[in-house]
Image 1 (tube, rainbow, N blue to C red):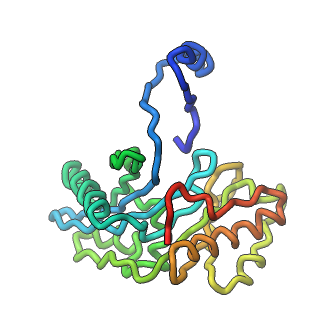
Image 2 (spheres, rainbow, N blue to C red):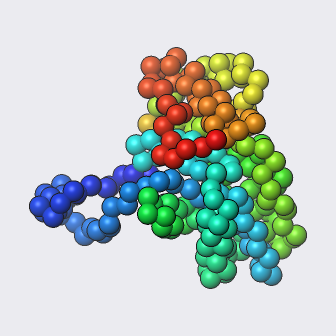
Image 3 (tube, rainbow, N blue to C red):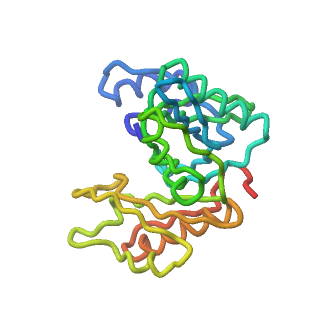
Length: 244
């Protein structure tokens, strides 16, 4: 989970050492995948069977933890349709009542592989508050109450950058005034009492005319706090695939 408990092995010769490193406990062996992009699709389903899928989100991870996410991902129309249909089919097959987010890998061979399922509001769709007709949180209430589902259209490109526990000092709070001074962004804090490295404590959201600009704004806002705290900045240009 979040990149923990994983060991990469490049050849059969490393399997025994990896098993011993893991504590000689039962393990799951998975084929390595060359990634073109990581994405997710949020689906809402009502008890009466109405289904609505959001546009796919493009996701970027640092050290196995979601760093930033942006909606809508720039995918070929056929691939976007396949991703939304796949996530909707999963929601139908499981009889979901509420939300389910399907996290997926797009391999360099064009394969679309489901990596993880989260039956709840999801970190990669927090930017629906700013960027979509209906936020995932409103949609969750509509879905579980069997109300008409809201439109899932992307109004404008929107991104989030996560605020992880390493940004918090031992005493007090990070310098939020640095983010609040940036008029293009919005600060969201989750109210968690204990901060630790890698824990998602909040996020900063931004909208813009393009996906690249939205990501750059959100990451830049996060980086202003990171620099003040002596935490490494994130490079918003490190995308596994081109995004206009």
